[in-house]
Image (cartoon, rainbow, N blue to C red; front, side, top):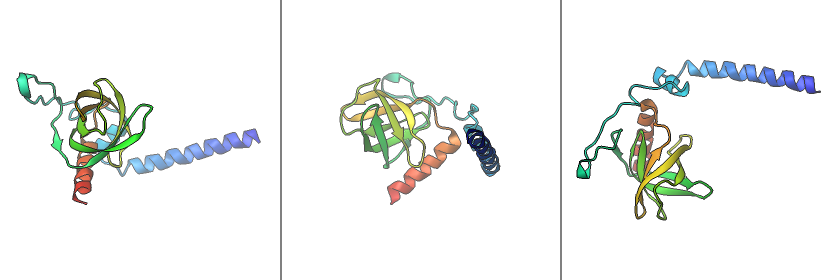
Length: 153
């Protein structure tokens, strides 16, 4: 029984691998590179933005949004919160309860896998969240279009 289970597992693995390769050919090159974990020139592009006090800390341009995202503190519950703006490196949300800088959270953008994140700053319930890994530009464009569709609905 063990031998047949092992060979069945290998067979299923080969079928799964062939299916992945077949689907990969349908994806744009930029998405394929993202899935392969390759760094992208665009994703790493630094675009500092002047903020109050002359401090240039932002690395990605922001897009205003009126959508909602799901945020969960580690060990806590999921909360659907208002999204003010989003970039490939993070977002600004209106939390239900105040957070502290350094808190680890999980952020879920529409139809995207959960993203490991950290609270960068908090002003009452308005919170800046930094994603552990920047979102690839091709994926970010898709996220922005989904957020626009969500806001229009």
